[in-house]
Amino acid sequence: MGTQNSDEQAGGTGRRALLGAAVLGASGAVLGLPGTARAGEERHGGGMKSLPVPTIIGHRGASGYRPEHTLGSYQLALDLGAHVVEAGDLVPTKDGHIVCRHEPEIGGTTDVADHPEFAGRRTTKLLDGVSVTGWFTEDFTLAELKTLRAIERIPANRPHNTLYNGRWEIPTFEEVLKWQDEQTRKRGRQVWIYPETKHPTYFRKLGLGLEERVAKLLRKYGKDGKNAPVILQSFEPTSIQRLNKLVGNPLVVLLSSAGSRPWDFVETGDPRTVADLITPKGLKEIAGYAQGIGPTLDLVIPKDANGSLTTPTTLVADAHKAGLILHPYTMRNENPFLPTEYRKGTDADAYGDVFGAYRTYFATGIDGVFTDNPDTGLLARQDFVNG
Image (cartoon, rainbow, N blue to C red):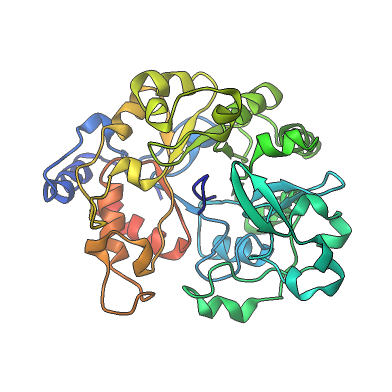
């Protein structure tokens, strides 16, 4: 997951509500109790609502420590205790298989550039209105993609991850579903995954519709019901609406910056922006076909021109009123990815006061969060739940 344009259970709520007030009071705003997360409470019922609150979701696995969207990254996220693993961002191959990559362009996440046999595949395409140059999954067969190996996407920020360059291949979604079953058996607890359909309108126009292929695989492995441990997400509302007709899985609409428009809206001439979707009216509409939203953290607490947090919005309370769960993205430990007031030291890529940032975001009442560092997220959750 990323922006569409880029990049225990415990009882009681009163103490944590007061904690939330204390944390947010410093910025001059406190959301009312209806918007609080009821942190640590035991949820009843099946499906996504059975997950612990706040839910810690391993973003592309444990991508703070391993190259993203690899079985190594997914495995480590589970080993670190993530409640759910985002495995993976789904894109198709030339021959119709579904694989896990952050984007269809794979020059930045694989060693394809080191394969002279594929030099001629490098090209420039218009991807959701943006000119992108590189190598694209839809121009490769699965067999060809399996000759590549994954590399770290942001080596400047995470040079330690480059140690693992070349260790893992590109996983297929079917391999992930088998891995999920295997890990569930080994661990004696249900493993959850949270895949995303990437650029579904773009691929549909190429004759490589994602939703039908994903639904077929979910049905094959008996994971297409409302209580299935597979949450499906997309930045394109129409992709979620299409999935809603194909499978019974819990569904989540991803939301980028307030002024942005989902690409399917652009293609169909729908003038609405994300700002329209997060109004009470827009949230009520989403609740008609989805169970949750995945907003940017900035839609929960905006930043000022200096990158510091300002007053929380009413999004949490409004979404909860509409019956929607909120899983914002993305928490990362490094300074560049944190609000200004939580950065520490002069090293641009050193870890900042991420625990402080988690505390502030949890206090808004969010139901969970995507994080590149699941172990950090779980410690922050424990601090928050225990007050």
